[in-house]
Amino acid sequence: MKNLSLFVLFTIALFFYSCSNQPSSPTRESSSPDLPNIVIFYVDDLGYGDLGCYGAQGVKTPAVDRLATNGIQFTDAHSTAATCTPSRYSLLTGEYAFRSNAAILPGDAPLLINMDRPTLPAMLQQAGYRTAVVGKWHLGLGLGDVDWNDQVKPGPLEVGFDYSFLLPATGDRVPTVYLENHRVVNLSSNDPLVVSYEEKVGDRPTGLERPDLLRVKADTQHSQTIINGVSRIGTMGGGQSAVWVDEDFPDVFTGKAKEFIETSKDQPFFLFFSFHDIHVPRLPHERFKGKSEMGVRGDAIAQMDWMTGEVMRSLDELGVAENTLIIFTSDNGPVLNDGYEDLAVEMLGSHSPGGAYRGGKYSAFEAGTRVPMIVSFPSKINEPKINNALISQVDIYASLAQLTGQQLANTEAIDSQGLLETLMGESKGRTFMLEESFTLSLRKNNWKYISPLEGKQLPTWINNKQVESGLSRDEQLYNLSLDVNESHNIANEYPELLSEMKNKIEEIKQRSERGIMP
Image (cartoon, rainbow, N blue to C red):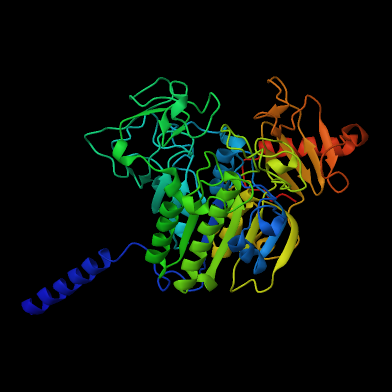
C-alpha cells in the first residue's frame, strides 16, 4: 500500500512537472486552428501615388502590385496622423495620439506607450498569437536616461510583443545600432555606447565640423554625428562594433522577419514589419541603385517592394500564405526633401507621390494622411476589388479583435471602430474620421474640415517649400467630391455643417470610453 501511494504521488508530480515545462507559445491545436496569421507591412513616408497599382511613374512595384491584384485596394484609407510617431502610437493602441500628446520623438525618448495600456499585440497575445515587431520603432525606450550598455527596457516586450528587432528611433537619429529584445546587438563592453541630444559626446566628427566627409549634404538639424558618411540628428560616442550600415537594412530586417515566420509557422503569429524605407537618409543597397528613374527615393521604393516580396515568398514556401491576412500601408504621406539633399525633388519627373491629393507628410491637407492600403487574405478574399470606403488605421485594432473573437473593454482602443467587413471588401466604412497634423481635421464622407491654428507660429510651407502645411488662422471647409485639391475654402457657405463638424471634434476629444462613430 505504501509503494502504491508513492507511485501515485510520483505520477502526480510528474504530470505537474511536464505541464509546467510545456512551451509557453501557443500552437494552433492549443488555441484555434482557424486563427489566421497576421502581417502588417508598415512603410515609412510612402505616399498615396508611390506604388504602381496607385499610378506611380518612374518606379515599378511588382510585389506590392501582386497583393493588390489578389486583394482589396483602398482609395480612401488613412494613417491617423501626418507624422510617424503619432500614427504608430494610434495603430498599436487604438487611440488618437493627441490623447497622449504624442509627437515626433527624439532618439533617446522614454517609452511613449504606458505599460498598463492595452495594445494591439497584447490583445493578439491573449487570443493565442506569438507577436513580433521588426524594423523601425520610434515610440521611445526605457524610462528616460537610457543606459544603452545594459538592458534597454521597457520597450516592445513590455507592451505586447514576444520578440523585437529594432531600429530604435529613425535612420536619421542616433543611436545608429540595432536593438534585439532588450540588448544592443554586437555591443562590446570595452567600447561603451553613449548618446546625447543635449551636447556633443564621443570623438566622431559632426557634419558641421567635417562637411568634406559627407556623402550627402544635410540641413543643420541633420548635421551632427557622422555615421557611414551621413550626418544624423544627435551625437553618439563609442559602440563601434554595434554600428549599422544603412545599405544592409533590406537584408537584415527582411532576414529577421523571415526567421520569425519560420519559427512561428506552427502557431498563430502576428508580425508588425515596420520599414525604414523610404524615410531619409535614403541609402538603398547597391543592387537597387538605378532600379527607378527617380534616383535614390525611387530606388528605395524598389527596395521596399523587394522586401515585401521576400516575406510573401517565405509565407508561400512555408505553406502558410493561404491563411495569412496581410495589411500593407504607410505611416503618413510622402515627403521629398526631408533634411538631406538627395535629388528627390530634382529627379521626380512626372511622378506624383501624393497622387491627385494636395500636401504630404506634416500637412493637414489630404495627402498628409491619405495613404495606400492593400488587404490580402487568400482564404477569404478570392477576387480583386477597389474599395472606396473611408477607413483609418486606428480601426485596425478593433477590426482584428473582431477577426480573432476578442471582446474589448469599454476603455480599450476607444477610438477604434470594428470594420472587419470593410477590410474584407464591404464598401461601407466610416462617416466621420479624425485626421491629425499640427492641427485636427475631420472628414464627414467627402466633406473635409480643418481646424484653425491658434496661438502658435503659422508655417505656410514645410521643408523648403516641398510640402504645404495646410494650416490657417481661418476655418477651412472643402468638398472633396468637387475639389479634390482642396483649393476652394467654402467654410462661409455652410455654417450649419461647419458647426456640426466642430462639435463632432469636441465630442471626440471628450470621449473616454469606446463609442462607435457613425
